[in-house]
Length: 382
Ligand code: ADP
Ligand code: MG
Picture 1 (cartoon, rainbow, N blue to C red):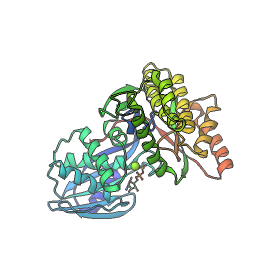
Picture 2 (cartoon, rainbow, N blue to C red):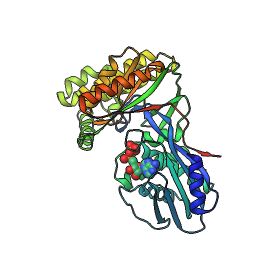
Picture 3 (spheres, helix red, strand yellow):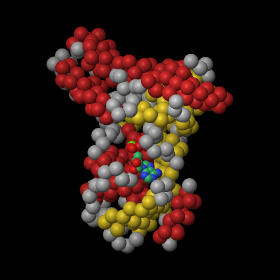
Picture 4 (tube, rainbow, N blue to C red):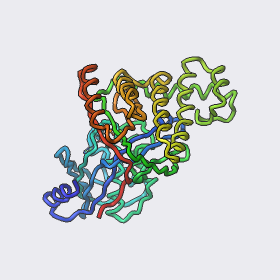
């Protein structure tokens, strides 16, 4: 991919670029906890986006998307959002950098990669973080990774209108090979947890569906959590989010909250606990325990938090039946997207065949399989 980007850059701009790379990400466990300042457990993956970039001594940014074979141009001193266009992620980052006081001059850029768009690996975060990394390298700005992650988050918020969390750009920026990041969404800091999978692998199965409910349900769940915090704060004084409630307080929480709110709060409170347990089990190499936590997470998301769908439930349940699968759960916001599965290497082919057949029979849709491996985060490439 890198060579293709260089070649394309030379053809279009007739000079040598410098290079950067930014990966997509998975989340091992910790779903719908980020907006309650809880814990998540992402890792960067090997799939990502490559960038070639060079100064052009003007005020223009001239960009070529290799994957979409499309050009986009804007004036780095004066531009406005263009929602839904890939160029928006680039303008969003330049806008953040400008606001932070970095002097950005004109540049030429070609980028392209191998993250399937919109399937849960967060190609948009890779694009934003990669733009930040390449501009930082080109103009010798030495921008800290955490700032890049925060700019990327703000950029998507302001330019795309997406109320997204810090996890995706954070994982793309800080990823480390054979590690996952136990990320605290209150302090925005993380612990690296080594992951040694041995004879096991992580495999995503894409349902290839996206139900319309997703956005409205997301907002409803967020408000439900906020309502619970409001109600609970008269008993649990000083709490700011559900993250501040301990597992031991669940019986009390149950006696206070209406049934509907309780099941939602319970998910968030126990999912935080599961993230820490997952950290422990991966640290000590207890993959079986981690697999059980994945299953518990899925059940909680499906039954208590109610953000799963038929297709995700089907894939998870089919996987749980197989002896060589240690764990399986929905990954991401829900109502479609992927399941993440931990299974024995030498059964991957058998798994793909079996799942493809049963999923096709049940829904008349072909699933996609994506092999993922915890990998290094965004960087300049020599
Ligand atoms: P995801 O879950 O993959 O982040 P999003 O809908 O949030 O999906 O972001 C996908 C958008 O990001 C695309 O529509 C496009 O605008 C931009 N994008 C991602 N990867 C690329 C790429 N390789 N080339 C051009 N644009 C990309
Ligand atoms: Mg995205």
